[in-house]
Amino acid sequence: MNNVYLTVRSGVVLTPILEQVIEACEPYFAKYGHHAEVTSGLRTPEEQVNLIKKFAAQHNVGSFKELTKADVDSKGMVDLRYLYFWQRAWSWLLHIGVIVNPPRDAECLFDYWSGGINKRGQIIHASPHFLGKSFDTGGGTDHDPSNEFGILQEAKMNGVGIVTLKLERANNAVHADCA
Image (cartoon, rainbow, N blue to C red):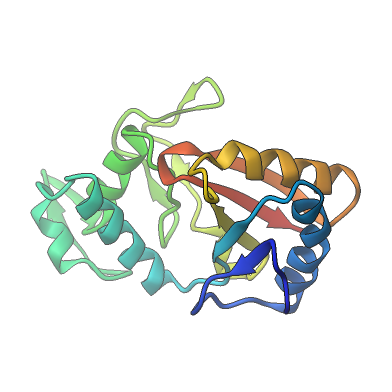
């Protein structure tokens, strides 16, 4: 892939579907002379746990001591409940506006408002990145993901193969699900 405007960060794993959609988005970024980077593609559940740990460190969510023992399926008694060791930190990230899916379907433990609905107590599904049909872009050189959102929305409206978009301001990112 030889994109100039929508480049792919080193180490990001792409599937054929993602390559096709990202390549089709390149002319839209070129049209506006806007540079952005694909920061994530296909991920494993293990990488998702590491992402939760990274975000927890960035946002001072270190008070959840069980996070240090966390891997994808590790569970134990936490606050008199049987939980994944990453579950409280992940739920708190959602509470403070850092959007990240869990590595396994899991209950959100804290208030988290999305689409006008408090998702506390609801099951949030595991990351769609595991299916190889989702990618994220960073907020570009201006660190404002709304520009990428607008460009990707235009590409979507013109049939590029994007099904849904989600603006993730706290992550400085746009999440795209592809057909």
